[in-house]
Image (cartoon, rainbow, N blue to C red):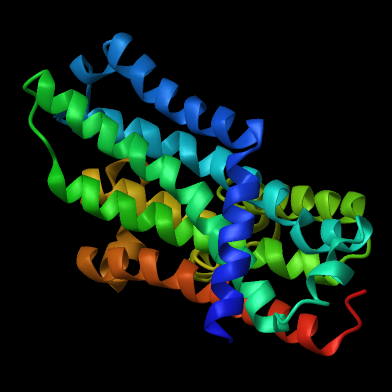
Amino acid sequence: MSGKGFLAILKLDLFQTLRTRGFWLYSLLFGGFVAYMFMSGITESQIIGFVGLGRLLVTFMQVCIVIIPIYVLITVVRSIVGDKENNVMEYMLSLPVSFNSFFWGKLFAKFIVIYTPLLLSLVLSIIWGSFLKLSVPWEFFWLYSGLLASMVFCFLGIGMFISVYTRSQELAVSSAFVIWLVLVAFIDLLLMGMMLKLRMNPDLVISLGMINPLQVFRVGVLVLFDPKLTTMGPVAYYILDTVSRTAYIAFAIGYPILLGLLFAMLGARRFRSKDVI
């Protein structure tokens, strides 16, 4: 990709996003949520022996499991198809900007504006906790930062893929919502129902569940503060007997990134080869 074209699209998309109210509301939502958790005294409660900032970070990540994927998808799926419908695409591609630069510039701009508020919220919790003289769980902070980055990138890739392949914003948003709904349902509910109904091998069901990036993210969050996964019941035996805790954490960060990159590359290939106007 052309370096100048990529940076031009990246800056343009960043500046456009920073001028929208949605970005600032999104940033205030997570910053305010961290502040609320401190004020509600959640750092004084205990879960499986963890208290203080560790307890707060676990709660924060559990909320992100549900909110971040749907927010990323709904925001991103309108990127390419929205530019087509608004006749922005024809103008932008009349400039000396390659298809690759346009696609990847928009993707990384979206990553920055979505991930930065999340990272700042984690940093805010660490600063505030240090001010209150709470013990800072640095291992949690760094690994949760990596997990959040991988999840955001994963759904960015899926969202850009949808945006390239759909013909209207309504269809793109509907597709994103259906995908999110299926992934959330397959975290536990449908997998358990499938196993009971079809009498499938539990090992096979759990393996299928690990294809779901939301399930991978959820288990990655749990395995950090609960190394034996006692909250997951018998499923923990299969996971921990198959891989070590360290190996699973590496998988939980690497797999969503690779999945997002795969969908992004498929989307970029379609974007280059198809009539985008």
